[in-house]
Image 1 (cartoon, one colour):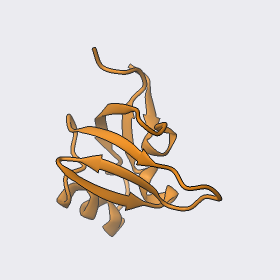
Image 2 (cartoon, one colour; image 1 turned 90 degrees about the vertical axis):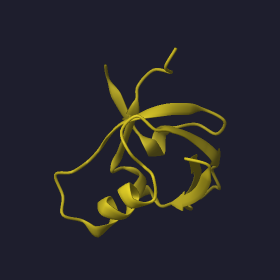
Image 3 (spheres, helix red, strand yellow; image 1 turned 135 degrees about the horizontal axis):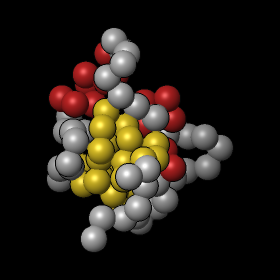
Length: 82
C-alpha cells in the first residue's frame, strides 16, 4: 500500500499511521513516538494555516502542532482505511 507524508493530509481527513521514519537519529522522531504518533494510530488534520506555518494534528485524544520537517517523518496510509 502506498504511503504519504503526514504533511499531505488535508484538513478534516483522517488516516492510519503506517510508520515513523526510523532511519534518522533525530530527537524529533523519538518525541513523536513519545507523544503518541505510533504505527496503527489514527491521525487527523485539524488546521492548516497558510504560508508554510505549522499544521495542527489530532492523535490519541490530543492535538499537536507540527512543522513540515517533523510531519514528514510520519508516514500515513495512502488511501483512507475502510
